[in-house]
Amino acid sequence: MRSRYTAYTLGRDDYLLVTWQAAHRPAAQDLGQDPPVKWLGLQVKAFRPIDADHACVEFVARYKIGGKAHRLHETSRFVREDGRWLYTDGDIHSN
Image 1 (cartoon, rainbow, N blue to C red):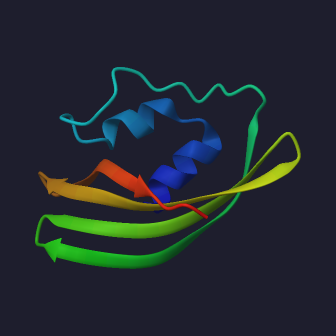
Image 2 (tube, helix red, strand yellow):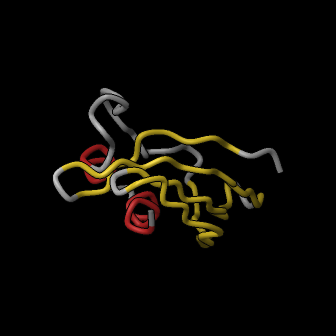
């Protein structure tokens, strides 16, 4: 989770794609946002293992666009394949 957040802050589309499970991965990722996003912080609120190869992470990411503050509150699902945790999908919480 933290490495994916860091990839967003650095605009690392390549890293996001390789850490997305193939069955759920988009064909492309483009972080070249206009206006640009300024990431302010990540708070991991909960980690819930489901079994040895599945887990959920609830987090809040704070960011600004055009000087206006926003929050992304999501519960993400991950699966472990070949020893690596991969993002599958998530549910966004209304703030």
